[in-house]
Image (cartoon, rainbow, N blue to C red; front, side):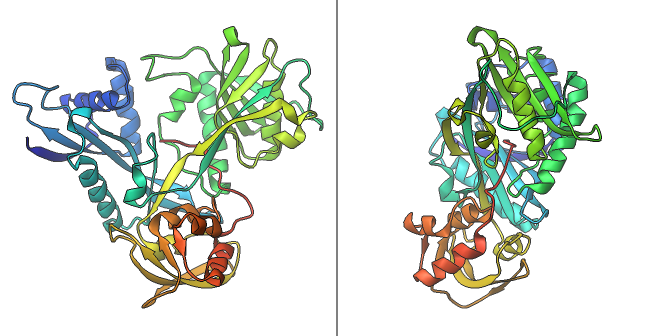
Length: 416
């Protein structure tokens, strides 16, 4: 059966091709069929983000789901990541990757991925990023875990108390007003946190409860509140749902540009009547909450895991825009089975600015996956050496570790 690879940008209206695409992605992620308004809203969102749709199509000879529904889907969009020192670097974001169960192990994903990565590098992008549902797939394409997430539960209720005074600056807002406030806060967070990834357009309506694609309509259970600074401007925002049958609050999103704003929002959530527990999927890795609680045992970590994965496409360019916190120098060879980042390089950092030059050889070797995991500072080079992704003389590993070390872990609040 012949596979035909085709690409399209987002049309001005919902076409049969776009319906077929949405149907294929829904199949891949176990979702139901969408209503017409959901399709139209989705089209508007992905058009704002400038999605490119790459698909694998087949002629089922009278069977299958029709000529417009691909058996493999792959999306790329150019968005920004914070590479440190406040620098925003365009990167290739990859999402909605599916291969229909009936067409696996035919090279569809390999073809779609390698073509997309080579195209991104040819277009001048030095980084590619994605989130995953299956962790064993993307390492072979050169992606390394670059940010992580922590899930937690806070026991609230009458005994909830903090050790410091919290000035009451939280206000509940309408769904419509929450959109602009949340954008303002996110822009501040994105500009100041290494490892932050730009948010896609769907976040606006989803976090406000204005539209939920899974429900094919608004989600009236979603509430939003903002934290205001001393001048009355939003510097924190939270989106949450009250699950009455469980007596708990489920946080969809909590953003804070400053520690005071984050603690103010937690104080608000922990003080809501009839609530015994606050559940959050992505607790900030730099949160002061455990140290601000009168009883730290009231906060329980319920899970940790990978969040975004990063792939370096152009070593010299990627390192040239990274904000380094330590000066030094090291030479290393990058091993890349796709050949995109292969080579030997000398990295010299002075006053936080990097200069990268090619060299003929180096004693230190890195798998390209390791470079992705080092890039935002998530993991130390010594850990990657123990895992077999870095090899070389101990002094060289020490130098690599020192150069990529960061005072704070990367902070990312955006999936895609």
